[in-house]
Amino acid sequence: MKTVTASALLSAIALVAGCAGYSGSGPSAEAKLKPTAGNTSSGVVHFQQNGNRVTVRASIEGLTPGVHGFHIHEKGDCSAPDATSAGGHFNPGAKQHGAPTSVDHHGGDFGNLTADANGRASLTLVVANGEITLDRDVANSIIGKGVIVHADPDDYKTQPTGNAGKRVACGVIARN
View 1 (cartoon, rainbow, N blue to C red):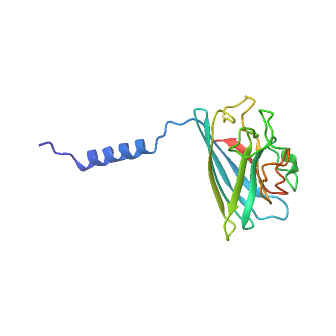
View 2 (spheres, one colour):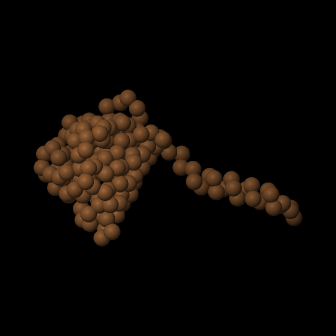
View 3 (tube, rainbow, N blue to C red):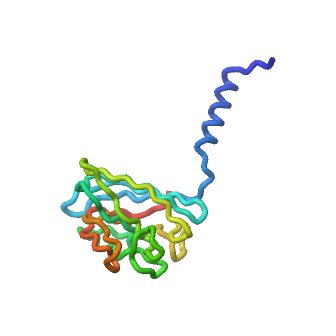
């Protein structure tokens, strides 16, 4: 029978634990959301690319309870008090606005977030088929673009914005 020392056992445990957290996925990015003038919403949106899929994980607080539109916008500029400096929706495929599950929708159409009674919302969404990417210097790259949370729900019909109302939080997507 072979004897294993405590240090060897601890080294093996550390190695297994390290491998368990390794996903082999591609680049990552995040946007730190800050409130627009007169609002209190803030949060963070994490992006993780794996092949032609980007997983989006959002955690936002300070919202009014209910449903809020959530989109990537064409410019990473949150300097205007109402974040209109972020421009319109990011739409590299020149498609109609729509729900993220519909065939026709902007690459930046992430749908709606639902804030609970405490004003907190979270969302996990996988954007497939290379609609967006964290690769730099390509037409569908979201690096340097803006993330906007809106005051109202996205109706998925009104062109080109979804009638989601004013912008309550804005952040710029930056690679980690």
